[in-house]
Image 1 (tube, one colour):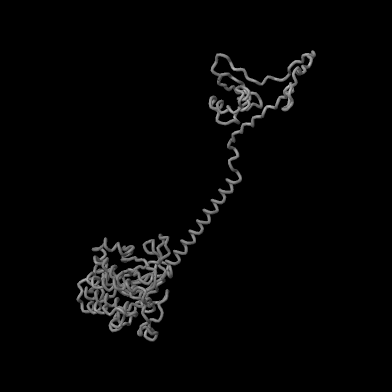
Image 2: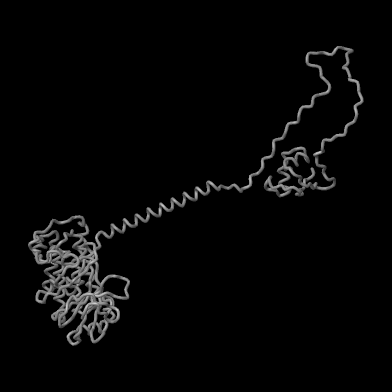
Length: 428
């Protein structure tokens, strides 16, 4: 099949990773997915040769849907679609990374949990999915399965004993820090009790994966107490012993190390680097918090400035009543004798002679308000310039009684008097 071929009007082939008489594996792009992550297509063109695999998907259709993105029959070819995992491929990661006991225990425990979740699948599918070429490692402790079905003819008739032995190989590589570790490397390591589990896997003493996990849980619990201890570089991790698989960076061609008798099966894996994801995520959250805090302070400052300049200038302010003027002293017309001056007997004060003066009309206006007789109150029309204090002074002779007028007329503000307004003055 040529590149740029579209399968089932959805998957565009971008590369051919492997092909033989039994199966073909393509790297493709899902045209209807917004994700840019490539997908793998395992194709069985010879339906007779792949009948065992096809029957497994027909008999375990519901179980298979939990592990594969899609599977379908098109143009007399059976296709199985699986997504690509991020992270580093397990062979390169385990050889080039020094792990502490906690990280090793986390990887093995996560691997066993994923295998237990596959218990309902056919044995040959579980065996292929648990191969080293299908495993990626995230954040130094999380196992991710690519779920690429890459079969060899002997995988069709695999047994449970061989499946458990593969689990032993995985634990040996993790605790031996290399694909080429021996059981002696584990016995001489920081957790030699792990070697017992590996030997029991090789001897076929475990009936299923749950039994392996039951023995491994105490070791994992112990490793959690020593998560900060990082072992030294083991002797078997020298570059000379890793010459055949020197570097496993992204984009390199990998081979399946767990099929020594099968022909080389290269995979061109494009990986997504996720180094320091938690640190980057926390830094991004911190930046957003700083931005939100700055916006909040800016909005508060604008509100304070606007309140400072506008203020509450429209709120009415009660007018203070004017101060009462003291009446001017009226000089007495009769000079009283000063103290010490005694009036002599017979001396009478001189009385000025009355002189006739022409009468002049009194032009001083009468500002007093005359109460209405027989009524409880007197109506008064407000004149220009009147205040409650002045009206009280003119009606009662006491300006300080203006609060009584406010209460009687339901006036709440002394500045609300309007010329022409009629108010009632209660008679005493």
